Amino acid sequence: MATMTKKKLISTISQDQGIHPNHVRSVIQNFLDAMTECLAKGHRLEFRDFGVLQVVERKPKIGRNPKNASVPIQIPARRAVKFTPGKKMRRLIEQPGKNRRDGQ
Image (cartoon, rainbow, N blue to C red):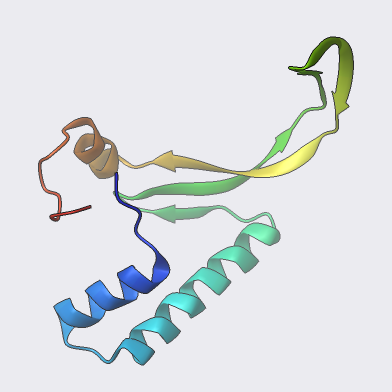
């Protein structure tokens, strides 16, 4: 399974759209910064067909150390980002090999 890095994404979009990589890098970085800022404020991000990102509260729980299972470990409550895929993404993921780019 290949990994798509930000650098590869910038290169791919730049070549596909004929836009200078520095412009693509700036747009992608601004997009990621805006998303991070919205999530940090507790807002929900919804992108049709792609999915939804939202901050959820994780309850405190008791964990176990695999090396010493008899000793309980208290895991505190925390906030986490939850991603729920949209219909189009879910459909594409469930049908491997279809509508995918080579090597990805």
